[in-house]
Each structure stands twice: as C-alpha cells, then as structure tokens.
Image 1 (tube, helix red, strand yellow):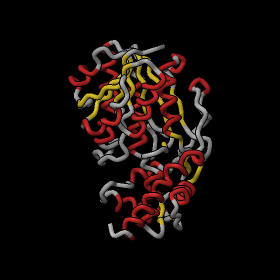
Image 2 (cartoon, rainbow, N blue to C red):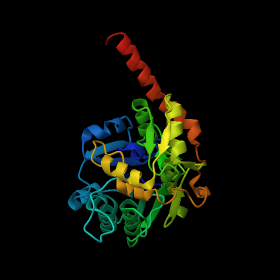
Image 3 (cartoon, rainbow, N blue to C red):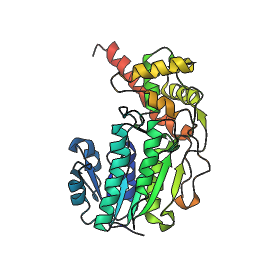
Image 4 (cartoon, rainbow, N blue to C red):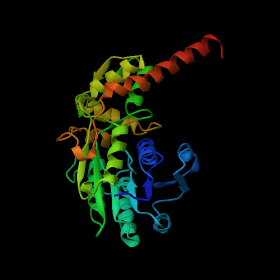
Length: 322
C-alpha cells in the first residue's frame, strides 16, 4: 500500500537518515521528520519531499499536531544508556521514557487520529527476561507498539548496525588510533552486524507490503563474529590494529563501571549485561523484505579507511607545522 504522508520519528539520526533517504528515493511519499534541534536535521533538507519540524515528540499535544494528515508512522528512537530505576524495577527512567512511554504515546496518537500503520524499531534480543535494562525496556516497547486497537504494526529487531558514521566500528577504530592495546570485556560475545542500508530497505519494504503487518522481524547480516573479531577488523580496516586483551568478568565489570563516568559514556554495566546473550538472529531475513544481507567486509573497509586517512592528514599538518 502506498502512503502519501509518513511521519518518521528519530529520522535525523544514523539509521533514521538512511530510512528517510530511501523513502525519498523509492516512494512518492512526503516525509516529515521532527527534531529537537534544527541543526541536526539540515542534511535532510536536500531531499525535496522531506520537511523537518522542531518538536518535542514526548509532548502529547505536540504529537497531535504532528499527526495532522499523516498516513503512517515510523519510530526509530532509541538510546543505549539510562540511569538505574527504583529497586525492583525492570529498567531505568531514561529507557522507560524513550523505549516504552514514547511508543505508547505514538500508538495512542495513531488511534486518536485514525493512523492505521506503524513501524517500530526494537532490538535483537529484546525480552522481558533479558539480562539488561536495555533489552527489557525494548521488549516493553514492542508490547506497546503492538497494543494499538486498529493499528497495524511491524516490529524490527536489528543486531548491532554498522555503516558510515556508526558508533560501533568507528569507536573501536578510534580507540586503536589512540591507544597501544585494547582491554576488552565480553570479548567472546557474539554479534551478527547488519548494514544500515539493509535496515533502511527493510523499513521501506514494510511500508510497501501489507504482508508485514502484525509481524516481528529480526535483521542481521550474513556472518556471526565475536566482539574480539569485530574490534580486530576495525583496527585492520582503519590502518592501526592493536593487541586485544580479553578481560575476566570482574575486571570487565570494573572497566564498564569506570567508563560510565567518562564523557561520551563508551560503555556501561548495562551494556555489558546485554552481552550475556548472543546478539545473533534465529533465522535469515524474511524473503518478503527483499533484502540481501550486505557483508561487513564489503562496506566497512571503505569508511573505516577514513580514520586512517585522517591520521595521515594530521601527520602531514604536523610536518608542515600547521
């Protein structure tokens, strides 16, 4: 089914920008992207069918205004870190706000405005019994996404997503540029990284094919890696591989606790808890999505080489005393 007006919440981020771009290229839909700050969405304005609106999507009155004339909604909002919740709670307040309360508000707005189509971003491994607040909050968000009366929802569960400007491989490449060795917690945890372009293609396919309504899909790449292998590849592709030292559980927990307090919060104890379960899909991607999974080796060397290129430019500037 074709939708004339699509609201993409979280559309200015790493994954959202790809989804919006593919919607603009492959459909005749007009796309609205709310953003907290205009500067974060300026890169989308080169697409003539895309408009951005400065808005607080957590405010229900604002949501009502955004839903005016909308036929379908895509929600890509997600965060990696949260404060801890009260004793006995399943997840902290930041996860609750972004992963649970926001989907509830979006679905409620869909019901109020007669919007019958909703596509929701979750995460591979989401479970009410998950080992981390992140995974438990994602499961609660899925339940909210599927609870709207008369709203046809599709839920996607991607593994870790890679691509230019990702915060995964690029982070490990940057760390190896700076440090002579990489101490790594949960080094043997398994991941099945999926290319950001494939994720975007799946979201667009969901809006084009009604057979996806009411279903939950896992999104993963063609190969499973350990975290150690991924960190090693990030170093090789960026031009500065370093020795990787796997940490025992106690030291990994201590490292994660320390990193929680550093700027940028590269790791948290909750992230470490998430890695207790393998981030691996139970099956290949569904054929109705039309996605042929892209190998990490076909894409990552190209964009991670930029880290190495920047290092070379820095050296040239230093030699030229600039």
